[in-house]
Image (cartoon, rainbow, N blue to C red):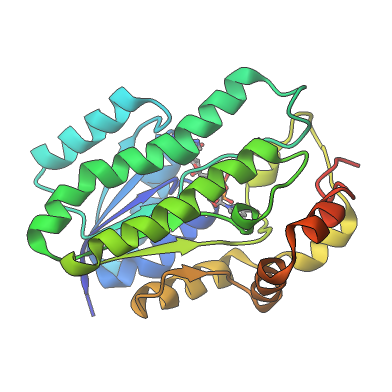
Length: 265
Ligand SMILES: NC(=O)c1ccc[n+]([C@@H]2O[C@H](COP(=O)([O-])OP(=O)(O)OC[C@H]3O[C@@H](n4cnc5c(N)ncnc54)[C@H](OP(=O)(O)O)[C@@H]3O)[C@@H](O)[C@H]2O)c1
């Protein structure tokens, strides 16, 4: 059943974005894959075309740069591609204390995780609204409900994503456009390597228990999109942790976070 006319996925060159492309290819007439590493996108596109007979367009773009987001939107318009499903997935993290961070990396992260995601919604929405049809999936994080020392700016960018998604969802309800915030806990992708400040930087081993497979994260996200849900915490352990966190008084949360769960080993 091809129920998605045009799906746009950002950050499709690895991790969750690539997995979304694989799991949704059979439902799409056309897919638009976006990331900086065009060679990876082309390889993935080849596989998806062969396996699912879907049309795939690849766009190389650095979504932390406003001009490149505008160029992407212009290219979509020129090729008459009108996404009815947008997966705002591209994002990076930065592990370590705030004071020691590289400002360049923090700035890029804020531009990508918040500004890029918001700008793409703004660029794509008018078309969805005129068709009174569409779906937006914003990839947030369990970190969006936790102020996390040693991951402070990343967690704050994801708090923005969850808050923005909730409000946007209400604004768009009358237009039959669903907005979903996906809030994964830790997942093995390239994320950890990109977030690390030094090669091989590692974290408290007890967190390993919390990891959820990317396949499960994406399949639960797709189920939540189909159910037109507002938010999903994929994996029962993560869902349980989220429920627990939401019940805790801030003072208790502060005590727990003062153990520095993200401090590098
Ligand atoms: N993995 C986790 O533990 C975890 C947990 C919660 C939430 N998340 C969120 O999940 C999303 C996907 O991350 P992932 O875990 O799949 O990590 P990943 O494997 O590192 O994938 C990140 C994707 O974002 C793209 N990207 C990075 N910088 C970009 C830029 N400037 N412009 C365009 N694309 C860019 C990367 O492609 P290029 O490098 O080719 O540009 C890549 O395709 C992120 O929003 C992340 O915050 C991850």
